[in-house]
Image (cartoon, rainbow, N blue to C red; front, side):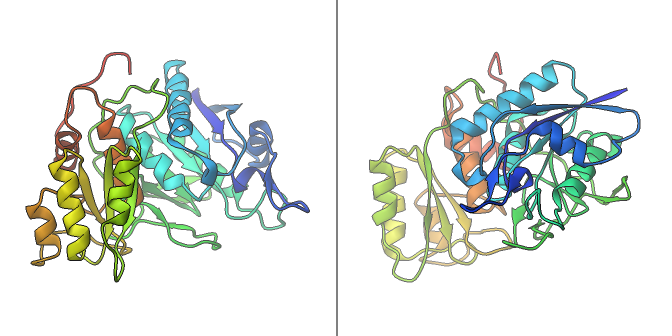
Length: 333
């Protein structure tokens, strides 16, 4: 008998509509009951952790969710399913992927329509997530995000529509599993990245800010971020990783002062590369790192997790993770 633990955290999937707007009030047992028949040969536990929108989460909340996953796995669960708001689900999924290397499935899902909507999509998404969690095809894939009949690997998944039930995509990668009538069909088998050895009992991750590039962008936000105590900065660069000379100058100052700067892109799909003189090539010359195809929000969590690893420069941790090199564990995590 396979044990699946559902961890409920609020979001639209747990929301009802009211005069003041949608509010997460539906508890985990009610969510599980809404699914109907559960996967054959599985027992499903339900635990409420928090009931609010994921837009209100900070890294302290994300580490608390990671501790819930750790507790469930230590208690013998064969898989963990987390219901979560869609606004920042891609970030929580990616952070969990960084923090765990257990082959047992960790699956996130949610909804675009509230629980009391006549066309609520939450029950179907949760049913699909439970099917994935209970299927051997999901083992060893890292953290997965299940939505609208598909499962995506955490790395590269992003919310790509604010309203549609088909809310998530993985540009350049695609889904790894399909779910149809409770049956799980493998589509691809990604290799998860190495675990980043962060102490899950930390109160929060170090601050890392995202700085956008746009016409006229200067170094103000980079300098202000570091003055506010950020451990590092992610630049949501133009195109394949470019920024104007004033912002490049601020990046050079940051790197010279020992602060890591990671370059991502504001573009929906594709990797970054130091191609253009005065742009990406200059950012590489002054010491910035390039985040491959991670979007800025996932790149931010990689850098924050790297900055939380004791005794190692975060730049080295980021380089090792991007190269797929294993990182030594921290005792007790």
